[in-house]
Image (tube, rainbow, N blue to C red):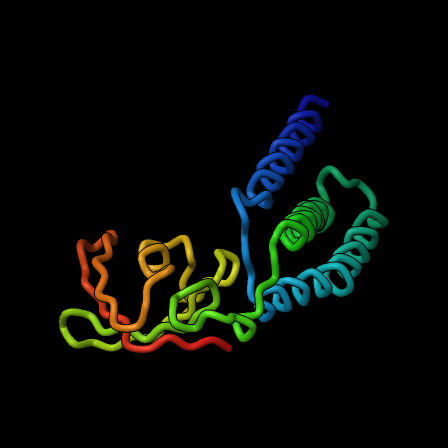
Length: 181
């Protein structure tokens, strides 16, 4: 019986950690595309994954002794993971403000949702979109507004040269272009 109590305690600790992670500090933004991706994941988990795993667990439970039934044990674990992710997504979507970059009125400065083309000191040109932490995809050119580069860019204008402190060291970049939408 102590093993079951430890499992419940661990579940409660995980839920508390998830709630803390889902509750953003300060005002959090997300683009419409990012919100749509999170909604699609939530819908898939709720309508496809959870019912499928629930059926698998019910089938495994019908096989008899649950204490040594690997399908049942792993199925229950997967169900807890799915439920945890569903709670996280619901809280996150509740807490975030959806911003449409195309509606930005001041297009002369870098704000959330801007797509910014930069040139570094070596002449290398890169383009990034400033997004929320849930949308980061560095290969896709989406960086967090909370990243060193994202924070340094916010509020800057076309032609501004900024120095960015990053893990690899200092870097200077010049803003070549700012686009929204």
